[in-house]
Amino acid sequence: MESLIFNQLAFARKNTLRILEGVTESDATRIPENFRNHILWHAGHIYLVQERFAFMLHGFDGQLPESFMALFAAGTTPLTWTETPPSMSEVIEGLGQQKQRIQLALADKLADKAPSPYTTSSGFRLETIGEFLNFTLYHEGMHISTIKHYKMLLSL
Image 1 (spheres, rainbow, N blue to C red):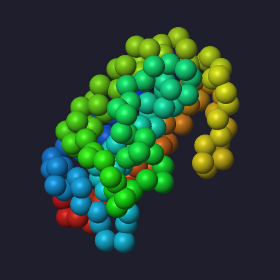
Image 2 (image 1 turned 120 degrees about the horizontal axis):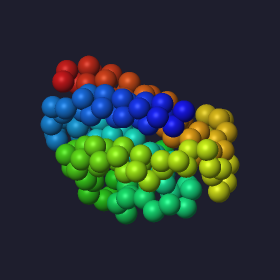
Image 3 (image 1 turned 90 degrees about the vertical axis):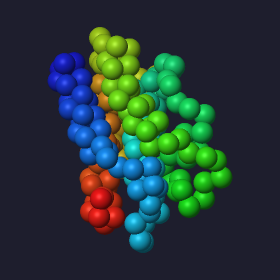
Image 4 (image 1 turned 135 degrees about the vertical axis):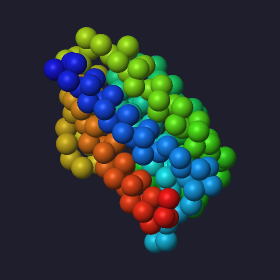
């Protein structure tokens, strides 16, 4: 089971990084008409949620820049940002390094109970570290689908 989750995490992240290839800094911050976020927000949000679900919600140290909660948490939007966001290349670099940190830190911990069960905004209850990681596959896939749609809308 452990290798399956880590293989799926690596597969999902490889595809995420492939989809983000070639997105320029200026295109990453263009918001499609009638939407409230852009590609940079979605990429930063993927990083934030993965960091929280892999590390922080279990009491482990994560690598989350201070501004990320204000910029990329659920419900935030670049339309109200008051802080300067990281560049797209910085977020991509973080996404690229994150999967290896997760596997190194959480090997043999997937069956461990989380300090507190967590119910996602969609109503799904997570109790073990493996369940948290498995849920992030679904989460990342949702946001990658949105990024793909944004790329089509923006003709990228």
